[in-house]
Image (cartoon, rainbow, N blue to C red; front, side):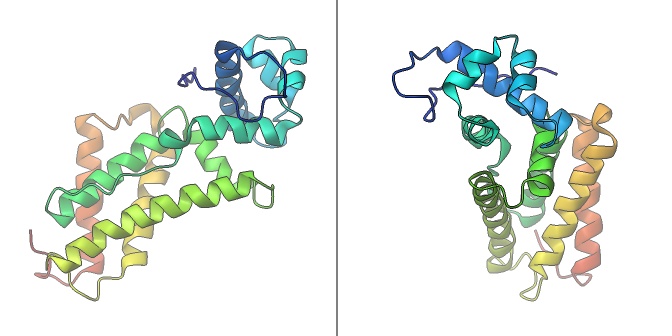
Length: 214
């Protein structure tokens, strides 16, 4: 599976080394693919060079080690691998459906394997762990904003268990994307049906009957 990245310059490139944005772009895409497929243990500069189809010397001249390379690749992907939008449709249920679709898009998409590994394999890896924490915080804040708006508008009860509701929605979407990625397309009718069903199921479980208002 090929991953396309926007052409960006590397903040970590070695001083004095002429920039080749196309090569760096290809290497960063390959880095995300290798990490997603092989994990941190299998992530090496040699493996990335082979995947990118470039000489490994080009990588060693630009990145000091594999931590620096992966961090650079993750920085290039920041807007697509970690950031969720707190959609405001005016209705809490619809906002939650859109949230589920965003998670499906992330975890069933080309960056899904890398996104899943970030939280399980890189705890304690300096720089990269901080990057994951920043992504996680942005996701949680966006998700909580949806629920809090629903409470403020009277569409959800004041005692809605925010953490439980969001953990169930986001965890459900993640697992579904992992076990059936071949049938999940975030823009498909099937994905929309699944998001609708998941949100209705979770709201029915955590919100007292009759207290959800559109």
